[in-house]
Image 1 (cartoon, rainbow, N blue to C red):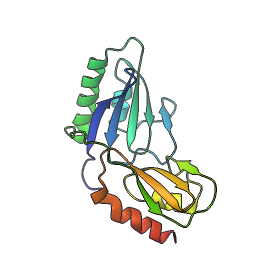
Image 2 (cartoon, rainbow, N blue to C red):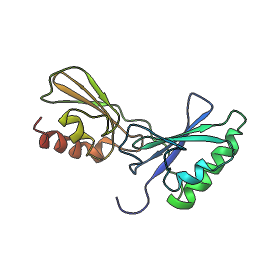
Image 3 (cartoon, rainbow, N blue to C red):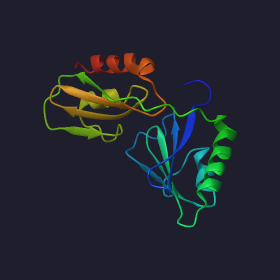
Image 4 (cartoon, helix red, strand yellow):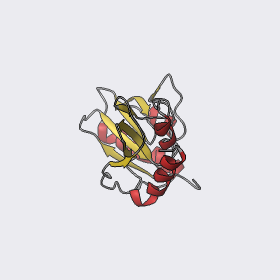
Length: 169
């Protein structure tokens, strides 16, 4: 990807959580919890904000966990300032794309992976090499693929299909 990634901020059903969606891969691990893990810029600055307890990195999303005494609006404003200083202004948050099922030559137990680290089957590993893939669910004869919130099927479907083809599925 050239230039800065696109990003967007949203609340979550849990009022003690904010989500930062991004088009740059934050980790290939299942979840990296910070502290203990090291948050990349500008999320390191988010972790340093008063009111932030921790940041959990997923492939295309950071979950910002607030302290019990946090002012959610102040934290939201701090996140917007910290992230915008590095990646530019936030993008509008689009509606989430629906997951899509693709026929594949997979037989076996149902398998769910949210990262390259979790992906045990070759087809799932191949799909995580495609940009935008946030989750793969394998079941007999199909792979159900969910995208990161800022990705659109019209932008990544060709790469997803190419990954399936390259895996021999």
